[in-house]
Each structure stands twice: as C-alpha cells, then as structure tokens.
Amino acid sequence: MSTINLKLKESSYNVYIEQGLLPNIGKLISEWYKGERITIITDSSVDKLHSNMLTASLSRYAYYVSKIVIAPGEKSKSIETLNYIYNSLAEHGITRNNLIIAFGGGVIGDVAGFAAATYMRGIPYVQVPTTVMSQLDSSIGGKTAINIEAGKNLAGCFYQPKAVYIDTDILQTLPDKLFSEGLSEAIKYGAIKDTEFFSRLLGMNSIQDAREHINDIIFNCAGIKCDVVGKDEYDTGERMLLNFGHTFGHGIERYYNFEKYSHGEAVGLGMIIITRGSEAMGITKTGTADAIKEALAKFGLPYTYSVINKEKLLEFVKMDKKSEDGSIKLILLKKPGHAFVDKILKDDLIKFLQ
Image 1 (spheres, rainbow, N blue to C red):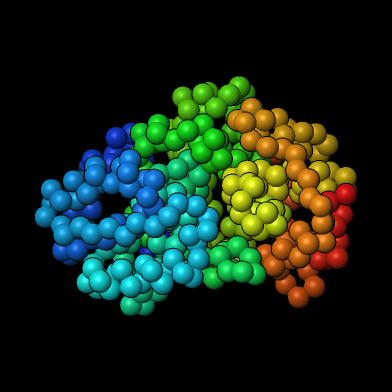
Image 2: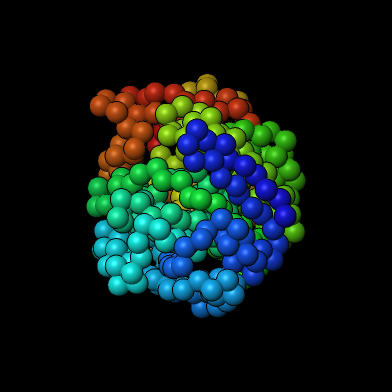
C-alpha cells in the first residue's frame, strides 16, 4: 500500500492507494473510528457494482451500516439532493459521533462532503473515490460544493475528510469514456507542475496505455495535489493553479446545461481555450496548446468545440469563484510544467474566444 500524508495545520490525514483495498476498508477504519454507525452516500451506478463489498467489509467490524443512494450525474449536485441527504441522515439516526463515507466519483464526493460539513454543523467523513478524476484529484483537499442556478460549485465550503481510501481495481469496471474523462485532470497536473510527467502522458498512445499505468498516474497526481494543498489549504495562492482549464470548462458545462460535455471533457476544452489565447498574446510558449490537444486526442477526449452565443458563455465564465469586481483570476502557462496566476479584466475574456 502506498501512503501519502497531507500535512495541514489542523486536520492532517493520509491518502491510501492500493489495488484491492476496498475489502480491507473496514479494518483500516476500525483502527481509528470507534463509533457504531456508518452511513454510505453513493449513487445508483456505484451501488450496484461495489456497495456489497464495502458494506461487507464494514459489517465484519460490527458497524451498523446504512446507505443513501442518489442518482448519478452532475444534476445531483443540487439543493434538492442535499435536502434529501439531510433528511435521510436524520432517519438513519446519524449524529456527530458517527461517520459518513462518500463512495463514488466527484459528484458524490462534493455533495456528500458538503452534507457532512453542514449536517449538525459537521459529521466526520472519509472519501472512497471510484473514478479516475476523483481518485487523482477531487477526493483530496476538502473542497465540497453543490451547483446553483447561477453557476457550478457556487455553494460550498472547505471540509477535510478524515482519510482518503483509493482502490485502483475499482477503475477496471469503468468504460473507456468514463475512464478517459479523468485523464484530462492528469494532463492538467503535468501541464501546471510536472514537465516530465506531461511528457510521459504524451508518450502514451491510447486509453489502454493509461489503464496499464494508472497506479503511477494516480500516485503522481495525488502527490502533487497533497503537496499543493498542504501549502495552500484555502485556495488563496498556489492552490489556484489546480484550476487550470476550469474557468472556461465550468462555463462550457453550464452553457450546455451539463448535458453535452462531462466535467473532464469540459476541463480539457478549457485548457485548450486558455492556452490558445495566451499563446496568441505571447504569454505561452508556441506549441503548448497543440501538445495539450495531442494528449487529449490520444485519450479520446474532445479538443474542439463550438458555441453559438459567445456572450452567453462569457456570462457563465464571469460567475467563476475566482471572479472579482471587474476582473477574474485565470491560470496560464508559460510552458508545460510552469503555471502562474494572472488577473484579467472581465472585458478582455472575449480575447480567448476569437
């Protein structure tokens, strides 16, 4: 088992990575959790495939286990779903000395984490991520959120889990499309922080190559995430670099009402938009956008897009959390492996859509 320690001032914890870890989660949790009740929050797809194994592992250690199952997909990150979770937690008798397990992809991690943070003013929880994106990125760092009508992730808070348990064997059940979505975040990590890792990704030729190297990909990205979050837990400095591609990506998701592109696909498009624009402005080394495009293409991810109404797209982009009164903070590249935060006037965002 590989273990990465995320060192924070008040709530440090470990990220555990291992093939075949799921059957042993009960033992790992029993080493520190002495309560009686555990509620698993998951979606119907993960529930059908994996919940029996997780429940059996927990039951071996005499925990009383209950489940809350919601619909899969981005639309479940809503106030309606959050309210359903709150009421279900009450029905299951969950109190502040019990435990919640967020068992699923990024949507489950976000909404279950937000429920844990706010129900009874805070219930301990752990992340057990089941997708590439959630394993290498979103399960780590304590960001929780739901979407509101005005935009993506605009209601949320920072609330760190007690631990993150990553079983890479779970990824074997993912179809190629769902597997590849998470690889956009791996490309992001190479682009912002690790030139050598970015080159390794470019050296792969297919999704199958990525599947064969997924343990190394997860470990590499999780290590970068832990290092960055350890330096900037509340996203006021270096952690902002992790949002490369997300500002326009979130705008694209919202523009299409979360129906045309998945989060990972939209982030990939966001990286292309930002980097083509910054290259045209002379900020980024020429050819960087083409390198990102090449990496996306190898993993079957979209790298071109079309919007009918650019002004409407920009309205959603301007609602990003990094938005200020007349400006917005964007993550730009100097070259692969070297990112920085720049403040752009909102009126200049149109330059990235030429």
